[in-house]
Image 1: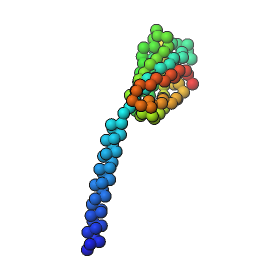
Image 2: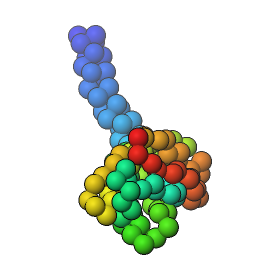
Image 3: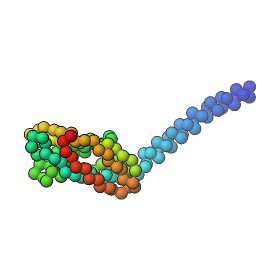
Image 4: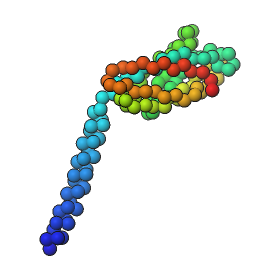
Length: 128
């Protein structure tokens, strides 16, 4: 009878402590500081010699667009806010040109800030 009581007690307490541990871990992740990463660079013309009008960059769950390239000097700047501190994300860029053609640039790595400060990273984009 004692063994059954001991087994039932352990079986009852284990899920409760595991749930509390998971909840604490989730709260810690949600509160972890994240620094901003500003990505800048130049954008090459399309193969059709048409000038770029915008660049869209996806990194993890975030997508940023700079649509100020028309008439600009083919330079862009976007800021990501969800790249983990000290982590990395794969950047995937798509450039749209004046003649409405697009090209994808080679994938690249975006490095998260080592702390909560904003870091800048340069990445020039050209057709693959």
